[in-house]
Image (cartoon, rainbow over all chains, first blue to last red; front, side, top):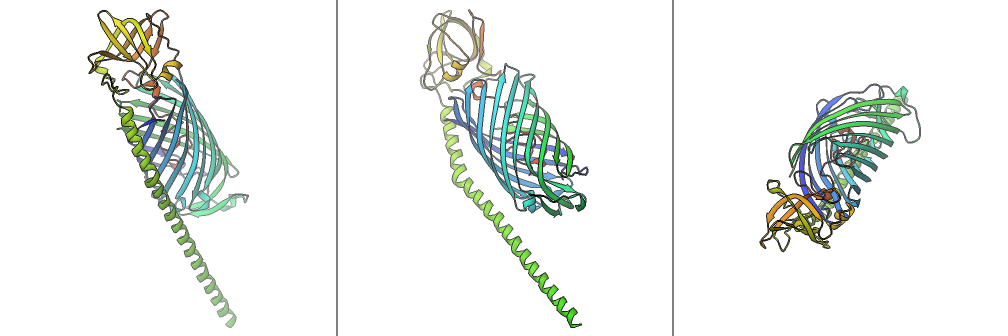
Length: 254
Length: 211
């Protein structure tokens, strides 16, 4: 098996209309994030190769600095090409996240299987499954989840592309509520008062649906930029909540 | 009065015990976090760093030169030297490692065409038998053995009209897969608040977990 490695760095500015995952509307915030990654990709000299990434990232929020975090993630994996136009990646991953609100600091592990198919010169599709188990310092913020997603991409030119995707996930999620009277007791629910959100936080099992669109430009072999928008709905016993999230980013591959 | 004092002392004692319990709990959490971070650091030092060094070394090896020509493969493609060659092919060779190659006689010149790994060539259904008329677009260079080489970007097999593309416009080898990050890989979707490396990085997906 073989691979080649490359460094990548980048930054993005983004927003989220519901950073506290509130069932009562939620608070919005904007953020800046920066990252550096060491990425290894298969050389393609054989059907099987190594792939993966090690990433260090920091994010700072404009209003709620309690949510500022740094995260290091490692995802070594393998890539298999069943056909020239079909790629399969399998990788476990490990993640350590330190959040200003230390209750939310967590260690996580999981695994991912993803596939990508090139359809002609201009179109491609993909599917992925992710399992993640995140264990936070405070149980309310711990979760396990199963995620499946699909996406379709179009290469408008050699340099310009766009994608649209759908994702469904089932698992635990923390959610914020304005009053304890709305909290129903139940199995697996953990309640805590959060200084960071200034309200009660409860963990429950939810279903999440997300639709996203993105577009990007490869300015040259190294420099690229992208814009992403995602609309998400979360449904659980506490009710439904929605969020609009987007980011504008730029990156450089060495 | 005595009863009130006793109750006050009990309350005070209970508060002290609660405080001790809270402090112990905080210390435990703090210790647990530090232990976890230390474990992660060890993981990085003992496992990831050596792995990356090996990968870097291997990358250099894979970006090595072809022994007979001195041409870098697969990275020797130069967009500034792209041209076309048309002629009859012969001597198609599928090595166990390195690129599939064949020769094209074009007028008085003979080019060695360097294509792709054998598995990619096979998957595209490419068949070039001796005498087949082909048109090759690619990066031309002169090998240190004095022979002419062309690193193929596109090959047209003229009798059948079949067109096979091996590299992008800027010469990126398509058998490596896309260099673009998609939703299912690293760039991902969604808010920075939705975990797994935030706006990018990590293991993909739009929702990116629940922190």
